[in-house]
Image (cartoon, rainbow, N blue to C red):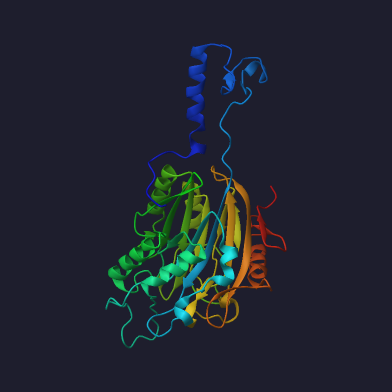
Amino acid sequence: MYAPAPLRSRPRRRYAAILGVLLAALLAAGCATPEPGADPVWQPGSGGGGTGAPVPTSGGGQPARPAISLSATGDIIMGNAPNRLPAGGGKGFFDSVEKALAADLVMGNLEEPLTVDTGTGKCGANSTRCFQFRAPPEYAAHLRDAGFDLLNQANNHGYDYGPKGYANTQRALEKYDLAHTGAPDQITVVDVKGVKVAVAGFSSYVWSNSLTDIAAAKKVVAKAAGLADLVVVQVHMGGEGADKTRVRPGTELFLGENRGDPVKFSKAMIDAGADLIVGHGPHVLRGMEFYKGRLIAYSLGNFAGGGNSLSNAGRLGWGGVLKVSLTPDGSWAGGSLTSTYMNSAGKPTMDPDDRGLGLVKQLTRSDFPETGARFDDAGSISPPAG
């Protein structure tokens, strides 16, 4: 499902060139009577007036390709081996949210390696402010059973068990036909109902595409735009903690680390050709805005923290499933945010109180009064008027 696609330009960037070739060919051919079912032909004075605009003929042209749906989540930890794993080997871990995830392409941020203990954990024996996670490789089956198609590894826990743990994770995902993205220069292209979707992962760590080197990041996205119809950026950005819900211009730090400038980075990626920005990292939900018709979700919060690996206190326990529909040229065709929370065992659970949606609506109004996404009471998303 995720074999690299051949290099090709995006449809919306080829129209001018195609029109020029068509015009030259039609002028050379003259105004012959079209065959039944032929494509639009050049007929000066007909329909387009003296400008000679193309006029459709019966049965002509290629039908427009319909929109596809994409869903995404924030941080996913299914447990922490060997002693903090969910009951029953994790079976049914995502049962509560499986229907909410359903889409043509389902993506998640995998915040832990799926590996055996490689003996190269990043935390020392006496560490007090260091956290490392891992789940057994066979837990990849739980992701597949939930409907996931693609997992992002570009985050601060991707290398918790070193390069061997990272590679083991890739093998575990591939065993269950799951795509992955996030390594340096890695652009993962998936075919979704005939639409090519390129996904690239970014973080502030050397095992991923760089969040902080915006010029280099733009080159990755521009390359991705040449490989596919749609480009999705998965990005682990921003400070961490219950008080990190607000989005403001400028670089964010956490424990002395540069966690990027979320606003500058996201808009630069859209300028370079991205159609959707999926943010995560702060462990809390953040607001959403539109830029040039493209949605930026600055953080989708915590989705799963099995074995109580992530705090579910207050807003740290709230997450959501973002679902968007895009046409093959990247145009917005609808979206929604479904509220979830992590229960007492850290499993993702549907939230009938819609706490996550309420928070995102509030934050969006505060941080992006003009450009913010608009939400109705059911969680449907629309661009701001105008």
